[in-house]
Length: 458
Image (cartoon, rainbow, N blue to C red; front, side, top):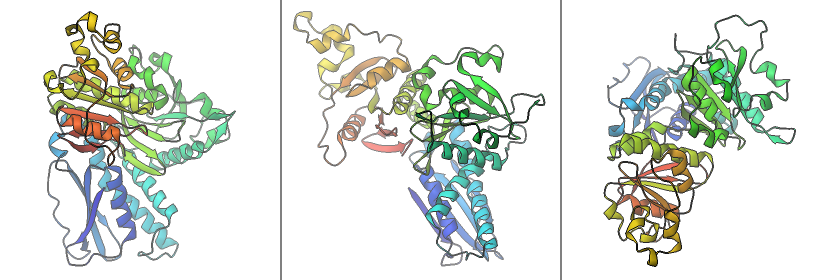
């Protein structure tokens, strides 16, 4: 997490609100740097440079000051961003303005209540400011077509409702709930059902719209309109193809919500049973709220990194999709792509090499090697890869997506400082083109050349 404050005329002013905004965005985009630069109200604002993978916004700061908030992707990540990274760039573009609007909201509220502008923020205010930044960002997200906006109040109320549900049980169930905010139906509803206000009194509503089998559709006026069912998606999307078969492998993570945003547009929010809140747009996970903190989840960045390493697009997609499935299942894994299978010699034991199964004399074949002949790894897909990768050890592909090894014990340096899985991922990345390490808490870390270059959660 990297952020800093500076001034065009010397010392920076006391501004706990601005500092919290900068810290919160840096925490959200851990592979970025955030700068908050102050200039006097009567002086020109610092010029905003048009840099790649950079976004800025200027707005009012503490009394007598104006501030410019700039967010940059780190130098190791910025060159990997391509047009395919649209969801990441869309979040990058809306965050600086969202941060400034959130700061202005809190400053006005504080002034109305007689609070000093330099007063320290309580934990509750810091938590509320983090949520407000996300609300402001989502309300201006390009996922909302037409005028490109949605009422911030509706998104704020939705987030607050999901937070309330996260601490609730109904009929001995840990609640899940899925909602998509999108204008899907053009007709005027016969019954006006305000979301989420009218659902609060219906305690079983989250059980009906659990986000796994059914998702509630809410329009931008805040009216609950209908449901999207996984097995009847064609009722809202005529002629729609069946859901992606991989989606069923992690439906409890919100795949129905994600698929709904891909086909219907808008923003989807899903409360998981583990009390995390996931935000989706265009079929991709955007943000995750866990433990009162938000983290951006640019899944397409991992695909871009994998593709940049030389992996074919199909192999990169399978690799990343499998990592997401495992992350949603809260299981650890190491997945890798290598350019030359021979580079694994001395790193991965021969018994773990699926690609060498036919090179071993059947008379000398061990039990583990014999198992290789029983599995079907031809035309590898994400679900099959995730099944292999959930075993202890590393799962390794070549650039074309062919399986080379699974359950492979990687010979690594001392792991006392890093942990066994991290040490193995670092060691393997010195030979592999790309390594994705999935931890049991759901984080996905990208390794190249022995270093962690990005964390998709964190």
